[in-house]
Length: 298
Image 1 (tube, rainbow, N blue to C red):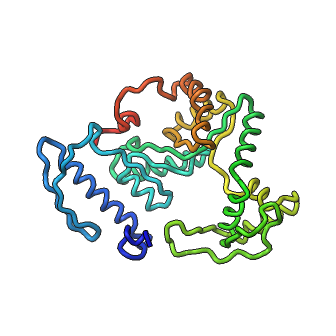
Image 2: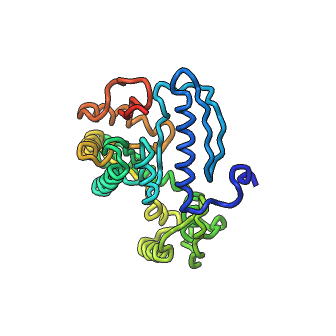
Image 3: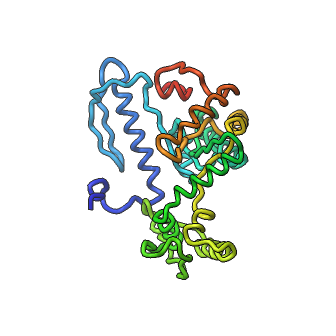
């Protein structure tokens, strides 16, 4: 029932969501620009999404417009980012060729939108596991995976695949014998949608039978994999330098495997190696997020 306080009844049609988002951003920018000088200017907007009558009371910040971040991998989402965003998050930051293909696609959309190719920062989400040796890093990554997939998490991930409540199942027992329930195709936010669930389940069953895995062990080995990189500081720094220098990414949006200590190895071991290669700053040259990201003023 609480959700009814934040919407006008039902969900927006999927095709209308970015149209509304763009109308919202247009209205917000008009309000920010309404106090760009010494005297605020009244802002009046009438469209299918918003009715606005306001005189801004707060001057713009030093960076002008706030930095706009966009996360969306559909064609519509990429176009929206190319027209409006300063930074785009993505799921394309683990494999170099995949990351470069995404970056090239975004740059092509920027050109169509009439923006310079370097006007948008590309920051894929990723996890990073650092070890003193490659073997240590792989061992730590395996430990992280086991710790992340608790019994309850294993049941939840398998439940998404089967589209069933599996909370009553034994995570240390076998996979469910049931067929998956049809997926939700309503497009509602948060609705689980898994392509070819039956095919994935068959592969899971074959692997579980061949290896003697329990439900939890199957999820640990075959379930949703975190996007990420594993290695020594030197190997990771070389890898990231290749990504950056060949235009595949501008950086990474790091998801620590443990908060806050999952960042310790990155800060203490990886960052110095990146700085040695000249791809990570040693000091800030500005005071705003827009300046830190080397974005043009707005």
